[in-house]
Length: 236
Image (cartoon, rainbow, N blue to C red; front, side, top):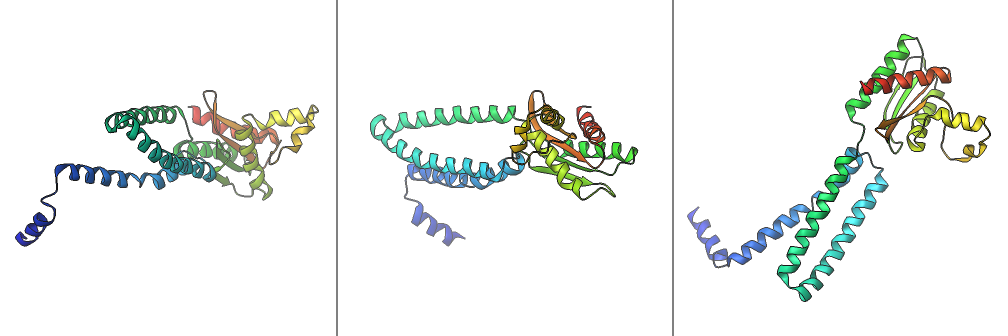
């Protein structure tokens, strides 16, 4: 042990304190690089963003890193190291505070909220002996949960998910689309991927749509009753 310590002292003992300050700072900076893959997982699984959107954000982060190195070098030459460091720290703090505020204001459907909706909708359907499929999606229309009750038709699988997706992305009940088309707005039929059948409802947080729930398997009115039962349970 003493020999190892002696070798360490002989190799690194003469280095000045500034070197070790820079070494520690570099180590912390390199460890911070692990944030990027974690950020991707957080955006897709934690915030519910599509993979392509999360990839774009990570790409912008990478481009910003390259630009920051260039700007930092130019600023150091013109303003000096101290001013550049102070500006970088101040800018980073402002950006982090802004991002934190935006994330705090954004709402997503939690696993518990999704489970509550699906269970309440299931109980309402079973109480009436209705064989249906139930789907819940996030604000982007990506599937979060799906349940097909016994004897529900195969067609109800895709229709329930389509209703939920339509309600979330168009930010309105699917009955509104059905009524609009019946009233002559046939151009809505050209919108790709929409299901203009009653039974899909948006999930709201205040005035913000954070998801959708869709039901299929019985009449359109009954489908919406089941979806509403799921929403009502979430609000209790």
